[in-house]
Length: 334
Image (cartoon, rainbow, N blue to C red; front, top):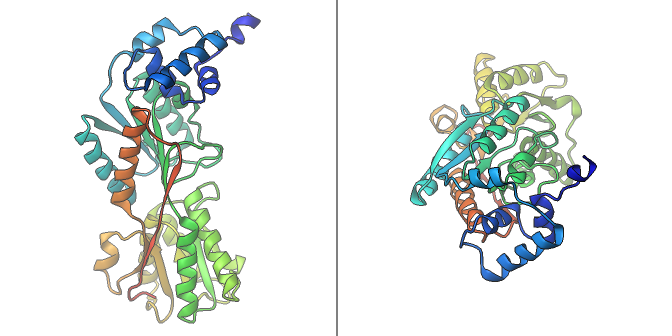
């Protein structure tokens, strides 16, 4: 039993050959998409490690899938639907379709969907992880399924990813608000284990310090990443003493909730409170005053994630994260 427990895995072969598990899988399954020298290196690693492929597993893997999985935390968030729309266009051009999995920011649901991807032997995965610390993608990696992360970092993961420079997003907001003369700047952020909102909060805090301003901990609110969370957080801030004169909301749905609360409270924007939100959703341009936002390149994120997944499937991806720049769109609310 002890010897069986120590039997070498496909991951051991990948490490010995210095390639991904997906590349090892393609070589073992006789795919001709791996260059000759790389394939030979994998075969030598198989011999050196003594790896014995699972015949049943290999038979399953030979079933050619033409479906990608898109695993997202909140399909009601327009950011994610925009990314998936762009991803789907890339999939269609390359002969794939996209199966959507909505985790609703729940780790147990995410884990079930990860297992479903593996059991159905889908052709690839594009994923925004629920938690930087606790999401588990190891079943996907161990199955040799090509994977590209987007939007959120995942602790310990160093593979293909398409991300936005969220620290810079926070810095842009801080520079804008400081230049406008605001002093008591508040922030509504998400849970600490969501890298996007945490980085935006950190960037805001650090750049305010450069401008000689402090981000008062009493003016920071944590919210879930839902509309109602933004409403609750903004109402809470307006009970603070002293009151903030500006607020940065570090996520799209909670920006909508915060705006709704500001209107219900009768606040004049920006006279009573300046508001800077996240994501250039249609509503931010339709309301009055139009809302200043930090916009993400949504379509480009989906495009690059799809192209990266194609490259990973073909064994040509470089495994390096792609970092995109956010854009501050200044409107009437600040």
